[in-house]
Length: 222
Image 1 (cartoon, rainbow, N blue to C red):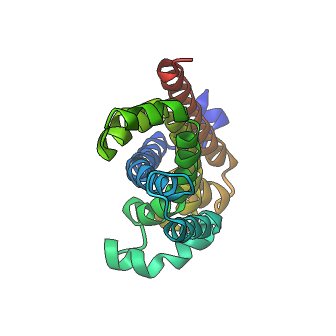
Image 2 (cartoon, one colour):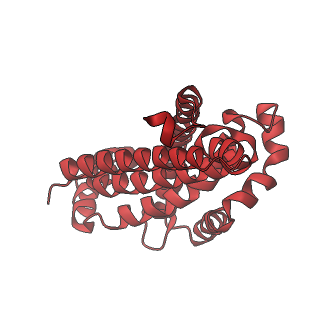
């Protein structure tokens, strides 16, 4: 029955491509989460009224975040080809897509982190400072826990964007479901392969969104 509707689909290829997409999304997601938190904290702390108010530093960090956040991902991949070749040793395969995925997504998530941190009740921050809380304590015991629902919601959106980015990276040889849809589907005019690859991407996105919503609701104290 399945062979009748999907004559060109090979399950081995689909599972392998799905695994590559999950691999790219997971590794780049972990790196994006760490870098995004660091950049978001830097933006929040150096902003006007922040704990380390440094307007010049804020403008520099903000400008860098805005620049990399604004570059279309497909162009960013091309721009980073020399860097990727030096770092990874090749511009093909799932690993080769990681630098572009991280550089493209981390600034985007950093802005979401900054927004989440700004939503923390200033009264809680001031009370912690009044009690003599150090910067490290303030960050890890107050700011990050209090903003955790927003941080999880933000990384959920970012992970979904990374799935989309990985599909675009697949078109230029990064592997994954995007590569499968383009090489085996589009170029060979096998619409059934393109359809299956698209459905697998949708399933991944739905699962990420569901998990993100569940975790956000568990963390939200309101």
